[in-house]
Image 1 (cartoon, rainbow, N blue to C red):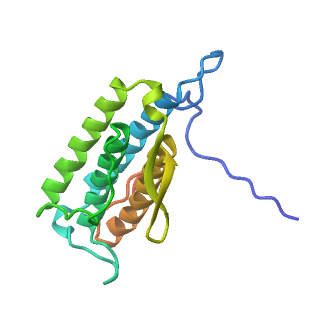
Image 2: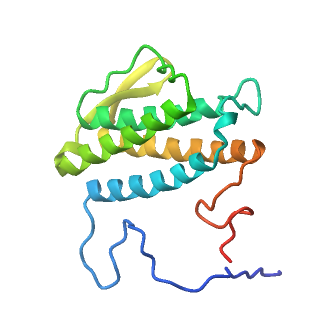
Length: 191
């Protein structure tokens, strides 16, 4: 059996980004609220880098007729963070379909930024208990059921990360340069 070895060409440095893991030597574990907020902010920054790299004149780009447009993906980021906010405030009511996006890329982008600001502000003001309870969400075709609120919030964030992956593919196909997301990219190496 042949083993494969590889190394990253960058120096060993202490991680400075917020993580859910306490610093070495600390016995303090962040609360579930703090863990979610830290990851939400870190992922938002990464998602914003992908969006900022996307050529806005390609907002209607679709790799396939059945695919969403790049603008619709951007709008999805704003909608999913809005759903997190509504769940946190116990105001989530599903129905009526996915809301239509604003007319322009710029309006979708501003909604994405504003919604994130609103979610962060609400999370900072929330107690840990505010992340408890349940929300109604899809549990099957045409079926709503109770889902733990924190699980719903993590699901929305995970779905946003999934759609960011889609957008990074669109970005390359639209002629843009894909930034480093979790590791170096061909367009943004770490060397």
